[in-house]
Amino acid sequence: MSAVDRMSVLLVAFLVSSCATVWKGSDETIAVTSQPPGASAIIECKGFRTQGMTPARLTIPRKANGCSLAVSKDSFVTRAVALDTGFNGPYWGNFAGVAGVGLALGGSFGGADNFVIVSSALLGVLGLGGFVVDRMTGRAFHHMPDEINVTLQPAR
Image 1 (cartoon, rainbow, N blue to C red):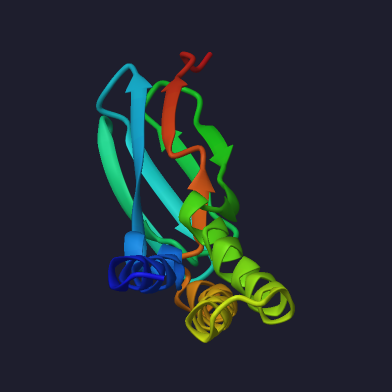
Image 2: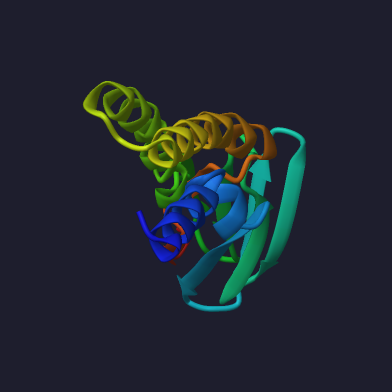
């Protein structure tokens, strides 16, 4: 294996370790618009609250739980929207690292050189660590929907 190939393997190992921690911040933005505009938008989570006037870009922590949005305006019925929490795409990049364990084991039995075996094992350890780090920092998560458009109905 050439020196360039070896550097490529190490670069991949670095990039996939703690993917969400590397690529995502600890906060995220939820865009809220309403018809009519100028409504109060409030996101409340367990232990966190933020608000603005529509159109609004509200920032919440990625690891916030139990979040909901309320949009209200005088003379209109208040609308509530629950925000679900899921894993973001870069978090799943850690699977590429975990696959490194299999490559290391396969390489050790298949006659691969020591660099490939050690690099693959390192990739696996970094991938497993990425799962832990991303979840602990909250960067593994995102809230859905992240763009909300609410039409308020006139109160009777």
